[in-house]
Length: 145
Image 1 (tube, one colour):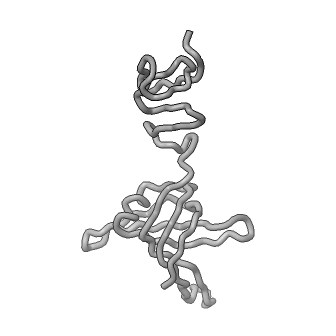
Image 2: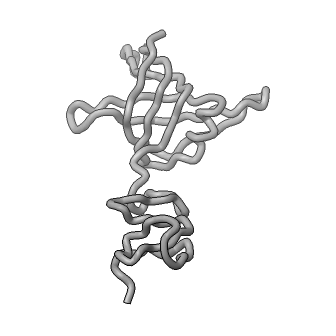
Image 3: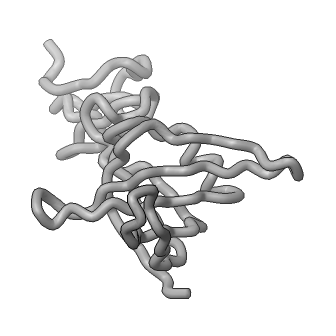
């Protein structure tokens, strides 16, 4: 087996199943590359990776680590077929920015803080523990009047 790490996007929502032994398994169809260089990879996630993978939706961008192999089979038309498959031991959703960012996550961009309780200094750029405290939904951008 060969270890692999790849970034890609999901072709469909994750398919979660539970084995007779009670272990979770999640199947993913991941596209890697762009345009003419696009390669589809079948991913099976187990254990802790399956817990993360179960929440993934169509077009989510993902990072996968696991072992890769080339599967071959004969199609219904009698032609020899092949495809890549990965047994994943790590699966993470990436590109958690903008609308994809989970609610309540702390954002620190150019000294602007959001999602945490803190105060602002007189410049209004949200340095922690200075000035009057703000609630969790407030972002301080400008000087106070």
